[in-house]
Length: 580
Image (tube, rainbow, N blue to C red):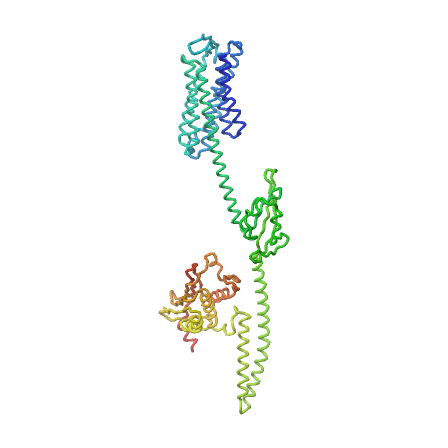
């Protein structure tokens, strides 16, 4: 009766080990299941010492020696637990020198040698019969041989190894892991001390069985608890990962729609919802046909007119996604190339303007050449007549036509140098700025804006630059400032000199330019104006560079813009020479 009761109790850790393996096949689970299995073997060996009424002495002896693998091989199993614990906890790095694979192989070899000794007379010589006691029924007690001290040595190694395991486990930062590993170490020490006490004191042998079962159950519950917490943490991590991926999908500028294998829409990103002016809730879990039924969406065409009246150019494609060969999804992708299309159109317009400019230049030259001949002839006839009034009028009108043709040439080639540019020209910056100020003051007053000049020059303000180019640069910047400001705003022009250079600053308190756009100011065909072309600023930047100048644009949204232009200062001697 006692044998069957003890075998039933000893089977509890075995069933717990099997159930864990069915639940998970992780390394932690396998080691812990092996730990419970060895405890079960240990208690089964004790149960066979109470089976003299069921089996013969020879059968009892064989099973007892076999099941002694439980207490003997617990030593390497506890050491293996230590290796796993150190790998999982970065804060236990210094313990890697203690818990390593080489140590595990050594301890396993020692336990195997002790287990083999167990099958010889040097391990167990026989059994004695113990009569019924006050708390224990009759049973057999093994008689140990001369080398049984190796088993005791193994027990001491297990206790010392488990103590070191507990010392390391106490330094784990994760509270749940620390509590679990401390449970294992304390439980293992208690089981071994309990077994030693039961074997060498008047306490009955089965006393350790009951305690071992209780400890096994507690350890099992602790393991299930830690696994549940790790599962919850993993689920929380996956939920955060999913949220992150959804946010990445939503901020993706491409238009994305995910369709499952049943043609059901399971996900739309924000970009496609804005394009089609729909909400995710309207189309979620609907058939693909609901998406294709939207009139604005036609995957076969690149050009589409949105519900807001905006023309967009979108290239549609799709990708098939397979998960574990069981789930198949289709990802519809729309790539917006509207900006590219606009740039292509801008380049096309630019080419057209270039052709028109070249045509204008050709016509201007063709007209100016005969005009020169006509003017010369009229001038000769003027010298032969007493009343040159008519000829003077004709000459004046021809000169006006020539001036118009010069303007036509400048329009055709705004970045080109004029005919006189090969000759050096010295200008006075202050005078030219005053002329520009006088020219635009009336425009500013009409728009209820103010332009002021602050001359801080302490030396000559002479520049070696073509007057027309200087005016073109300053007028372009001043016009931009006027367009960027609202009524009652001020535009200030400051001019000073530093380190042999003249610095001109045009400062406004207009709407400003975004930081992301500042780096592109001056690029051909790049503009922030609704009807701008980006040519004017590009020409100004080129002219400044051609005259060895520098330009810097600083701006802040709703604070204004400062354009700083710096030119090398012309020497006074050059100015005198030029004047002579």
